[in-house]
Image (cartoon, rainbow, N blue to C red; front, top):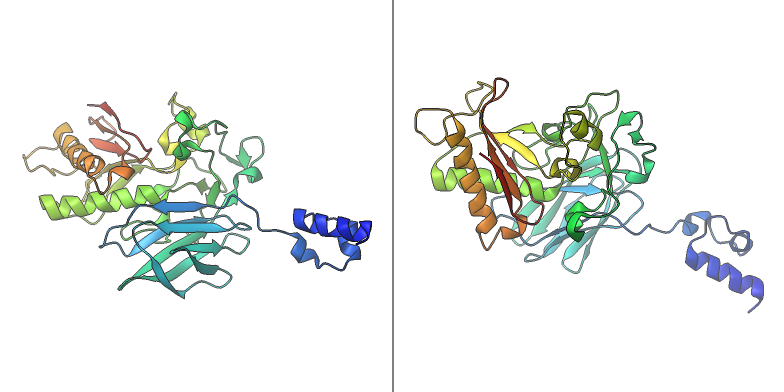
Length: 322
């Protein structure tokens, strides 16, 4: 083997897109753009039997993965144009086309069909000086709090548009339900699959075990950029709102704009928020769902809002509030 041939092979293996030696050997340029490591991995211990939809954020140019540890994906039934879904070790490997793309895929798990709501991320590295296409995001810590993967710097951001805002990301919720309140010509957010799972489990438990039936939770606050979080006076720079799995919620089935009387005592007060908190704590303690445990707190009414509850899936139990 000549030295030139050896260099060409080495540069091809390293994936250099600009190697003159590789070009001499006639290697097509597209083969010199290797799939980048570090795609999104959604790793779930299980999912509820009553769930029909699952959210899957994707980083284009990478191999993304979906794993449901106690279930096997048996077949890919359909996928949007440009998306490639392949079964791998009982889960899925997903490659997404470039751009602000989104859509629904359908997969078979046992005797059920699950819809995957897929949407592309804008990579974190596309942000410069805390700005993403002029939208003031701010900066995230490089070091994860307590070394937890849930506090890793985000892989990227979802661009919220008029076209994708109504993407049905779970059985009861749309993408726009979790948007940051910071306005701008562009708008971005982060949303975690685990957060949606916990919302759906909490809603199901309230109905099945306590007879509290409602259309969906009202999301008073979902995603916040680090910039917006500081702007409204929050001092913590590790707030779960920044990581896309924290939600301040209440039930408002009568359209009053405030919490309903969900504990049935004839009043709307902090005890309704405490009732929600109690049911959320049942989920955190349950053997089946404790992997979704997180922070939670009940909050009193103020002149601008009624009582509400914060929940998240940070990975360890934390409690505060009333």
